[in-house]
Structures are given as C-alpha cells and as structure tokens.
Amino acid sequence: MNVLILGAGAVGLGIAAKLSEVVEVTALTREGPAGTITEHGLTLEGAWGNGTYRFPCSSKPPSGVHFDYILITTKAYSTQELCRCYAGLLRNSEVVSLQNGLGSEEIISGFTDRVIGSVVMTGFIRRDEHRVHVTANAGETLFGRFPVGMDKSVQQLVETFSEAGIPSRGVVDIKSNLWSKNLISCTLNPISAVLGVRYGMLTRGPGWQIIEGITREVFLVAGAEGVPLLWENPEDYLAYLKNELIPVMSTHTSSMLQDITFRRRTEVGFMNGAISRFGEKHGIATPYNECLTNLVQFREQEHMDPRV
Image (tube, rainbow, N blue to C red; front, side):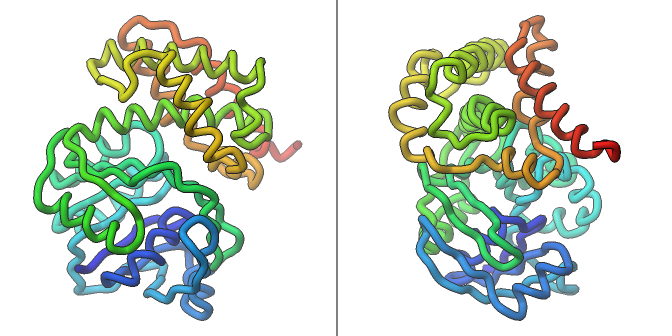
C-alpha cells in the first residue's frame, strides 16, 4: 500500500510515523521541516510511545507515483486550496479527511467521488520541526465512506491503521460521528483558546455554563439537519464530557489554543461558525456559538493587526 499525507503538521506527521512501520508513506509539509525530518527523522513521544521514524518527507509529491490513499490533514480552511492544487492526484485515489470541524468532506467531494471521512480522538502537539508529542488518546479513530456506508477500501484502511498501532474502527454513519466530534470541538476548543486554559479547567462553574449553552444549541441544529448525534440528549453528552472525556484529556492543550498562542489562523469558522450558519438556515438562534466564534476571530485579528 502506498499512502500520501497532504498538509502534514502535528497530526499528519504523527500518523505518518506510525504508518511508516507497515506501509509506504510519504508526507508533504513545508520545505524547512521537510528537510529537518529527512535529516533527523521524526521523533514521536507520549501516548503512542517514544521513537524516531524515518519516511520520505517533502514539500512536493514524487512524480509518477500512484497512491492508494491520500490523507488530508491540513487545517479545514485550507481544504479548498489544497484540493485545487492536487486535483490530478485526488481523482485516482481514495481520499481521506482527517480534519476538524464540518465541511471538509463536502469540499473534497467536489474533486472526487471516493471520499472517506474520519474522526480522530487523539491530541497532538508539535514540539519543533521534527518532534511531535501525543498528549492523549481518548478513543478509536473512526472511518466511514462519506456521507454514509462501508466498503472494502474503508475496511482496509481500518486494518492498516490498527496494524500500525492506531486503534481504529469502521462505521456506516460517519456523518453522524463527524457532527458528534464537532460537538466536542465546539464545547472545548474555543473556550480553552479564549481563556488560555487546558481542558481540565473547563468543568468549573462559569466555563461549564457556557459549555451547557453551546451543547443545547448544537443539539437543536443537528436535529433540524436530521443528523442524529451519538447521545440522545444534551444531558447525556454533558455527563460523558465531564465524567469520561475531560478526565482523559485534562492536560491537553487544544489545537485552537496552540493556534492563538502561535498567532495562527484557527478553525473556529468550521466548528462553532458552522453551527451558527446551519442555525441561521433553520431559523435557530445560536448566541453561544456565535459569541465564541466572534471572540476567537477577534483574537485572530488582534494578532494580525500590525499596531498590536
């Protein structure tokens, strides 16, 4: 099997390292890190174990090579541009989105009809150009044909990830799982980014009240869209969040907080912003999600303002 990873940051490089032990894998990233990784290898540490892995890493894909699977791990706001750039490659491979938020799979579907969606419940932090720390693993990686279905190609991907030491499972209803993962992202990422705290701090009273408001809005919007979530009601989800997920991820620094810290654009528009857009479509008010989107985007613009 030959695998190409597009937009390899912390997530893509971490996955490339593990996959490199069982398949041929090539990671595309920026020129500087690509050179460093080629020279020193990729050091992985944390929840997936410690080790140094060597695999082809470049800023350009090799010519004349067919890839069975192309994994897209870039930020959601870069999906359209990335797909346009590599449209020729995407047409001939199974294309897998390993991204946050809602909407990337729909964008990819404009370039190929062989789209596989995924849900990743693992935390990654890029320590430097060639070192990735896996902070926590809160569950299996899920794969499914988008928007619905299972087939041999999906199952083969599941088996490959599992063999590489990344516990994985195939699901028929990947869209439902994507919306459920986005609920988690909406309730944890923006608050942690605005307040500058790790997940474990968010169960305190004021923060938890905001989480409750976000949750109820997402359930209303998902119901209007006809997308069943993995929990029957907001109370069941909130109990899962407080008693199961946050304890496992309590020390994790969210990707959105990392982006704010390092003055990068965030994916809030594909998370809480997406919920607000769907809410507007159905006439559902989403003040909590809209407010968090505005606050995070204010922090983004603050960093882009040359006067700051």
